[in-house]
Length: 297
Image (cartoon, rainbow, N blue to C red; front, side, top):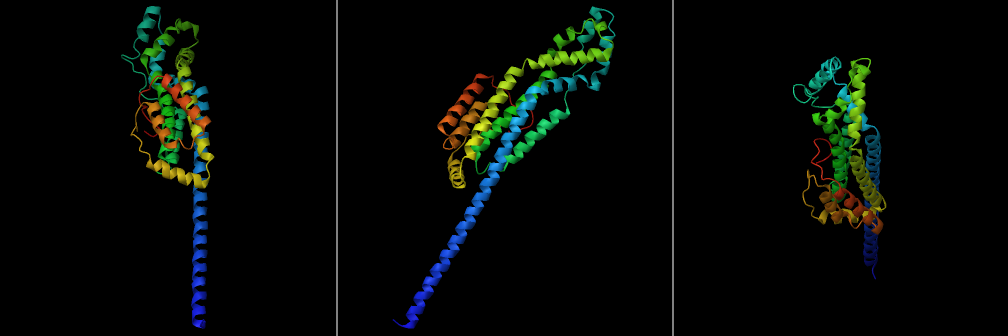
Protein backbone atom coordinates (compact mmCIF):
# COMPACT_ATOMS: atom_id res chain seq x y z
CA UNK A 1 0.00 0.00 0.00
CA UNK A 2 1.39 3.37 -0.98
CA UNK A 3 1.92 6.21 1.44
CA UNK A 4 -0.64 8.16 -0.53
CA UNK A 5 -3.30 5.50 0.19
CA UNK A 6 -2.32 5.38 3.84
CA UNK A 7 -2.55 9.15 4.01
CA UNK A 8 -6.02 9.06 2.43
CA UNK A 9 -7.21 6.44 4.93
CA UNK A 10 -5.86 8.46 7.85
CA UNK A 11 -7.51 11.54 6.46
CA UNK A 12 -10.83 9.72 6.14
CA UNK A 13 -10.63 8.50 9.73
CA UNK A 14 -9.77 12.01 10.83
CA UNK A 15 -12.80 13.39 9.02
CA UNK A 16 -14.99 10.76 10.62
CA UNK A 17 -13.56 11.58 14.04
CA UNK A 18 -14.13 15.27 13.45
CA UNK A 19 -17.70 14.59 12.30
CA UNK A 20 -18.25 12.40 15.36
CA UNK A 21 -16.93 15.13 17.64
CA UNK A 22 -19.14 17.69 15.93
CA UNK A 23 -22.19 15.45 16.29
CA UNK A 24 -21.39 14.80 19.96
CA UNK A 25 -21.02 18.53 20.57
CA UNK A 26 -24.34 19.17 18.82
CA UNK A 27 -26.04 16.50 20.92
CA UNK A 28 -24.65 18.01 24.09
CA UNK A 29 -25.87 21.44 23.00
CA UNK A 30 -29.33 20.08 22.09
CA UNK A 31 -29.59 18.27 25.40
CA UNK A 32 -28.58 21.42 27.28
CA UNK A 33 -31.23 23.44 25.43
CA UNK A 34 -33.86 20.80 26.26
CA UNK A 35 -32.78 20.78 29.91
CA UNK A 36 -32.93 24.58 30.17
CA UNK A 37 -36.31 24.63 28.43
CA UNK A 38 -37.65 21.99 30.80
CA UNK A 39 -36.29 23.88 33.82
CA UNK A 40 -38.00 27.12 32.76
CA UNK A 41 -41.24 25.29 32.02
CA UNK A 42 -41.30 23.55 35.40
CA UNK A 43 -40.48 26.78 37.22
CA UNK A 44 -43.37 28.54 35.46
CA UNK A 45 -46.01 25.90 36.18
CA UNK A 46 -44.84 25.62 39.80
CA UNK A 47 -45.28 29.39 40.06
CA UNK A 48 -48.77 29.10 38.56
CA UNK A 49 -49.78 26.40 41.05
CA UNK A 50 -48.63 28.62 43.92
CA UNK A 51 -50.56 31.61 42.60
CA UNK A 52 -53.78 29.59 42.39
CA UNK A 53 -53.35 28.27 45.93
CA UNK A 54 -52.74 31.75 47.36
CA UNK A 55 -55.71 33.18 45.48
CA UNK A 56 -57.98 30.41 46.72
CA UNK A 57 -57.06 31.15 50.33
CA UNK A 58 -57.52 34.92 49.97
CA UNK A 59 -60.83 34.73 48.12
CA UNK A 60 -62.28 32.08 50.42
CA UNK A 61 -61.57 33.85 53.70
CA UNK A 62 -61.57 37.62 53.14
CA UNK A 63 -63.06 38.57 49.80
CA UNK A 64 -66.83 38.67 50.62
CA UNK A 65 -66.23 41.07 53.52
CA UNK A 66 -63.97 43.26 51.37
CA UNK A 67 -66.57 43.47 48.58
CA UNK A 68 -69.37 44.40 51.00
CA UNK A 69 -67.22 47.00 52.75
CA UNK A 70 -66.11 48.61 49.49
CA UNK A 71 -69.67 48.71 48.14
CA UNK A 72 -71.18 50.26 51.26
CA UNK A 73 -68.52 52.94 51.72
CA UNK A 74 -69.05 54.37 48.20
CA UNK A 75 -69.50 58.15 48.29
CA UNK A 76 -72.43 57.77 45.91
CA UNK A 77 -74.43 56.29 48.79
CA UNK A 78 -73.64 58.99 51.37
CA UNK A 79 -76.95 60.84 51.02
CA UNK A 80 -78.95 57.61 50.93
CA UNK A 81 -77.74 56.44 54.34
CA UNK A 82 -77.99 59.93 55.85
CA UNK A 83 -81.63 60.21 54.70
CA UNK A 84 -82.38 56.69 55.85
CA UNK A 85 -81.02 57.45 59.31
CA UNK A 86 -83.19 60.55 59.45
CA UNK A 87 -86.43 58.54 59.08
CA UNK A 88 -88.96 59.55 61.74
CA UNK A 89 -91.22 56.53 61.35
CA UNK A 90 -91.06 52.94 60.19
CA UNK A 91 -93.24 53.80 57.19
CA UNK A 92 -90.88 56.61 56.18
CA UNK A 93 -87.87 54.34 56.70
CA UNK A 94 -89.18 51.64 54.36
CA UNK A 95 -90.25 54.21 51.78
CA UNK A 96 -86.73 55.61 51.68
CA UNK A 97 -85.20 52.13 51.67
CA UNK A 98 -87.23 51.23 48.57
CA UNK A 99 -85.39 53.93 46.64
CA UNK A 100 -82.41 51.58 46.28
CA UNK A 101 -82.51 50.10 42.81
CA UNK A 102 -85.08 52.63 41.59
CA UNK A 103 -84.38 56.33 42.06
CA UNK A 104 -81.02 55.57 43.70
CA UNK A 105 -78.70 53.11 41.99
CA UNK A 106 -76.11 50.98 43.69
CA UNK A 107 -72.61 51.83 42.41
CA UNK A 108 -72.22 50.17 39.02
CA UNK A 109 -68.66 49.09 39.70
CA UNK A 110 -66.69 48.04 42.71
CA UNK A 111 -63.04 48.98 42.58
CA UNK A 112 -61.62 47.65 45.81
CA UNK A 113 -57.85 47.39 45.90
CA UNK A 114 -58.16 43.69 46.63
CA UNK A 115 -60.57 43.22 43.72
CA UNK A 116 -58.09 44.85 41.37
CA UNK A 117 -55.14 42.94 42.81
CA UNK A 118 -56.95 39.63 42.20
CA UNK A 119 -57.42 40.52 38.56
CA UNK A 120 -53.81 41.62 38.32
CA UNK A 121 -52.92 38.12 39.50
CA UNK A 122 -55.18 36.55 36.89
CA UNK A 123 -53.53 38.64 34.19
CA UNK A 124 -50.10 37.54 35.40
CA UNK A 125 -51.26 33.93 35.27
CA UNK A 126 -52.53 34.50 31.75
CA UNK A 127 -49.23 35.91 30.58
CA UNK A 128 -47.20 33.16 32.26
CA UNK A 129 -49.33 30.29 30.96
CA UNK A 130 -49.64 31.73 27.46
CA UNK A 131 -45.91 31.30 26.98
CA UNK A 132 -46.44 27.52 26.94
CA UNK A 133 -49.69 27.40 24.99
CA UNK A 134 -48.07 26.46 21.68
CA UNK A 135 -46.04 23.61 23.21
CA UNK A 136 -48.68 22.28 25.62
CA UNK A 137 -52.19 23.26 24.43
CA UNK A 138 -53.81 20.58 26.58
CA UNK A 139 -52.17 21.78 29.76
CA UNK A 140 -52.93 25.37 28.82
CA UNK A 141 -56.61 24.54 28.40
CA UNK A 142 -56.73 22.97 31.87
CA UNK A 143 -55.00 25.96 33.50
CA UNK A 144 -57.09 28.45 31.53
CA UNK A 145 -60.23 26.75 32.82
CA UNK A 146 -58.98 27.09 36.39
CA UNK A 147 -58.28 30.76 35.75
CA UNK A 148 -61.72 31.16 34.17
CA UNK A 149 -63.36 29.73 37.27
CA UNK A 150 -61.41 31.95 39.63
CA UNK A 151 -62.41 35.00 37.58
CA UNK A 152 -66.04 33.92 37.68
CA UNK A 153 -66.06 33.62 41.48
CA UNK A 154 -64.47 37.04 41.88
CA UNK A 155 -67.17 38.57 39.68
CA UNK A 156 -69.97 36.57 41.29
CA UNK A 157 -69.48 38.25 44.67
CA UNK A 158 -69.34 41.72 43.12
CA UNK A 159 -72.44 41.17 41.00
CA UNK A 160 -74.31 39.93 44.09
CA UNK A 161 -73.22 42.99 46.10
CA UNK A 162 -74.61 45.28 43.37
CA UNK A 163 -77.94 43.42 43.15
CA UNK A 164 -80.60 45.65 44.75
CA UNK A 165 -82.73 42.60 45.55
CA UNK A 166 -79.97 41.37 47.84
CA UNK A 167 -80.14 44.62 49.83
CA UNK A 168 -83.72 44.12 51.02
CA UNK A 169 -83.12 41.89 54.02
CA UNK A 170 -80.04 43.80 55.31
CA UNK A 171 -81.95 47.10 55.07
CA UNK A 172 -84.94 45.76 56.98
CA UNK A 173 -82.63 44.75 59.82
CA UNK A 174 -81.52 48.37 60.28
CA UNK A 175 -84.85 49.44 61.78
CA UNK A 176 -85.14 51.07 64.27
CA UNK A 177 -82.40 53.47 63.19
CA UNK A 178 -82.03 55.00 66.65
CA UNK A 179 -80.27 51.86 67.83
CA UNK A 180 -77.22 53.40 66.12
CA UNK A 181 -75.45 56.51 67.35
CA UNK A 182 -75.24 58.04 63.90
CA UNK A 183 -75.69 57.35 60.17
CA UNK A 184 -72.18 55.97 59.86
CA UNK A 185 -72.77 53.44 62.64
CA UNK A 186 -75.90 52.28 60.82
CA UNK A 187 -73.91 52.06 57.60
CA UNK A 188 -71.24 49.89 59.24
CA UNK A 189 -73.96 47.57 60.51
CA UNK A 190 -75.42 47.35 57.02
CA UNK A 191 -72.00 46.33 55.69
CA UNK A 192 -71.96 43.49 58.21
CA UNK A 193 -75.46 42.36 57.18
CA UNK A 194 -74.53 42.53 53.48
CA UNK A 195 -71.46 40.40 54.17
CA UNK A 196 -73.70 37.76 55.74
CA UNK A 197 -75.82 37.84 52.60
CA UNK A 198 -72.76 37.30 50.40
CA UNK A 199 -71.51 34.48 52.59
CA UNK A 200 -74.57 32.46 51.60
CA UNK A 201 -72.76 32.00 48.29
CA UNK A 202 -69.60 30.91 50.01
CA UNK A 203 -70.32 27.19 50.01
CA UNK A 204 -70.77 27.11 46.23
CA UNK A 205 -67.86 29.45 45.51
CA UNK A 206 -65.45 27.70 47.86
CA UNK A 207 -66.36 24.28 46.49
CA UNK A 208 -65.65 25.52 42.98
CA UNK A 209 -62.37 27.19 43.97
CA UNK A 210 -61.16 24.13 45.91
CA UNK A 211 -61.93 21.77 43.04
CA UNK A 212 -60.33 23.98 40.42
CA UNK A 213 -57.26 24.40 42.59
CA UNK A 214 -57.08 20.61 42.88
CA UNK A 215 -57.12 20.37 39.07
CA UNK A 216 -54.21 22.81 38.95
CA UNK A 217 -52.24 20.70 41.41
CA UNK A 218 -52.99 17.41 39.63
CA UNK A 219 -51.85 18.53 36.19
CA UNK A 220 -48.88 20.52 37.49
CA UNK A 221 -47.55 17.66 39.60
CA UNK A 222 -47.97 15.30 36.65
CA UNK A 223 -45.85 17.50 34.38
CA UNK A 224 -43.24 18.11 37.07
CA UNK A 225 -42.54 14.35 37.13
CA UNK A 226 -41.49 14.32 33.46
CA UNK A 227 -37.85 14.31 32.37
CA UNK A 228 -36.73 16.77 29.67
CA UNK A 229 -36.89 13.91 27.16
CA UNK A 230 -40.41 13.00 28.30
CA UNK A 231 -41.49 16.64 28.01
CA UNK A 232 -40.22 16.80 24.43
CA UNK A 233 -42.17 13.65 23.63
CA UNK A 234 -45.29 15.07 25.31
CA UNK A 235 -45.00 18.28 23.28
CA UNK A 236 -45.13 16.24 20.10
CA UNK A 237 -48.11 14.25 21.36
CA UNK A 238 -50.10 17.31 22.43
CA UNK A 239 -49.52 19.06 19.12
CA UNK A 240 -51.26 16.17 17.32
CA UNK A 241 -54.46 16.28 19.42
CA UNK A 242 -57.23 18.40 17.92
CA UNK A 243 -58.99 20.28 20.69
CA UNK A 244 -62.45 21.74 20.19
CA UNK A 245 -62.64 25.50 20.52
CA UNK A 246 -64.17 26.12 23.93
CA UNK A 247 -62.51 29.48 24.43
CA UNK A 248 -65.01 31.64 26.28
CA UNK A 249 -67.40 28.75 26.88
CA UNK A 250 -69.07 28.67 30.27
CA UNK A 251 -69.09 24.88 30.57
CA UNK A 252 -65.93 24.18 32.46
CA UNK A 253 -66.42 20.41 32.37
CA UNK A 254 -66.26 20.47 28.57
CA UNK A 255 -63.04 22.43 28.66
CA UNK A 256 -61.45 20.11 31.22
CA UNK A 257 -62.63 16.99 29.35
CA UNK A 258 -61.03 18.35 26.19
CA UNK A 259 -57.84 19.04 28.08
CA UNK A 260 -57.64 15.49 29.37
CA UNK A 261 -57.67 14.13 25.81
CA UNK A 262 -54.33 15.85 25.27
CA UNK A 263 -52.69 15.20 28.66
CA UNK A 264 -53.98 11.69 29.47
CA UNK A 265 -50.58 10.07 28.84
CA UNK A 266 -48.98 12.31 31.47
CA UNK A 267 -51.39 11.40 34.25
CA UNK A 268 -50.81 8.39 36.46
CA UNK A 269 -53.83 6.13 37.12
CA UNK A 270 -54.28 7.81 40.50
CA UNK A 271 -54.00 11.31 39.02
CA UNK A 272 -56.42 10.40 36.25
CA UNK A 273 -58.96 9.17 38.80
CA UNK A 274 -58.56 12.35 40.86
CA UNK A 275 -58.99 14.46 37.74
CA UNK A 276 -62.21 12.63 36.88
CA UNK A 277 -63.43 13.13 40.45
CA UNK A 278 -62.90 16.86 40.06
CA UNK A 279 -64.90 16.80 36.83
CA UNK A 280 -67.77 15.09 38.64
CA UNK A 281 -67.78 17.70 41.40
CA UNK A 282 -67.79 20.58 38.91
CA UNK A 283 -70.58 18.91 36.93
CA UNK A 284 -72.63 18.79 40.12
CA UNK A 285 -72.35 22.53 40.57
CA UNK A 286 -74.36 25.06 38.64
CA UNK A 287 -72.96 25.87 35.20
CA UNK A 288 -71.89 29.48 35.62
CA UNK A 289 -72.31 32.18 33.00
CA UNK A 290 -69.14 33.54 31.43
CA UNK A 291 -67.16 35.71 33.80
CA UNK A 292 -67.22 39.35 32.91
CA UNK A 293 -63.51 40.07 33.12
CA UNK A 294 -60.12 38.63 33.87
CA UNK A 295 -58.69 35.25 33.08
CA UNK A 296 -57.97 34.00 29.58
CA UNK A 297 -61.16 33.36 27.69
